[in-house]
Image (tube, rainbow, N blue to C red; front, side, top):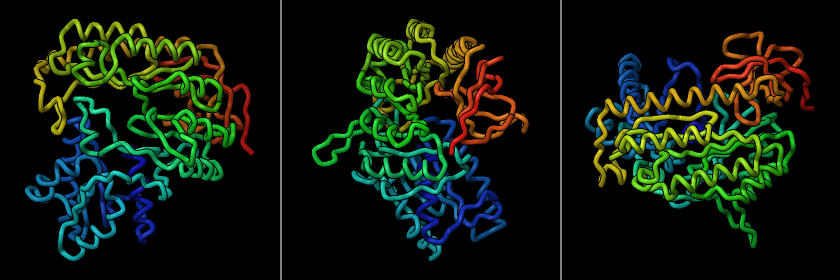
Length: 433
């Protein structure tokens, strides 16, 4: 979501005559786009701002801005007390950035952290930053109303609102015409997307169907799905369109119903398992990834063991794993006690990571000697003689170059693997025309 927001900001400022630069020393304005979900992210932002302040002493006209989720909570400390910032803009205030920058030029500080009930930036065509020309992100909705007790997003991004479906479809078509061959639809909970187009109600499943119909050569991914909302209708839509990728990110957070209740996740262990079983039944071969938080308030050892056993049962292809860090402006911070010792959190996280590394290894091992259709994204990071791409299950595949080119599909037979990567040889290539 933050990357998509950065592209929206770039578009707004480009329309006002600004240009982006990859060389930070050339910049007249530096924005940090922030996320408040993890505490270590905030610590990194503060260190980065101090570095920018040192740059500002050598270049007094340099303007420094803070965007996104941290804007409201940190504005007093960073803007007024530590005076590290010139501009602060919340996630719904990006259209106001040109005015805020004018205020800074007139000797003031520019601040707008107001949340909106309607803003979706649907009419703004993002400037694609650091793009490989093959894959792009499209934001389809903003905000969240799930109110998970550990999460700050409802407070920092406001209420849930869906973007005009026609603008999403138009942007998808434009990207395909520009040569992009894969799009990822973004939202805090894409399953709850809903738009009324006359008498037609466009659900997320219907939106996927419309985009899949643009061209069979356009791959579609999405993130993130909430387990309480992922319907059989959506799964059947994915199953019926080969260009909707067979990969679902389904954050579980904990394998314990007791902890899930304290997290206000609105599903149980059993309900999550039922949804996984539905995915396996309706979309055979679909990869399932997840998020796991360990050490949440009052998490007991038996709760931790239930998380491990659920991971073992699902056999996640990969996972994002974290230890719990209390975030201000959340229900957990206000009503629950962060009472799991840090050493216990560290030990549990290590056990979760070790288990997932084995599960990822086993997942990739099952792909050995099988053939996968891979969309080539570009050169491998380790060798200019190899390409890298991803299969439908979102696994990274490395293979030697032949006559392929980025943006083309090629079939790769897997010859070796690690827990993170598949390696093989191209067997047949389909070039886009």
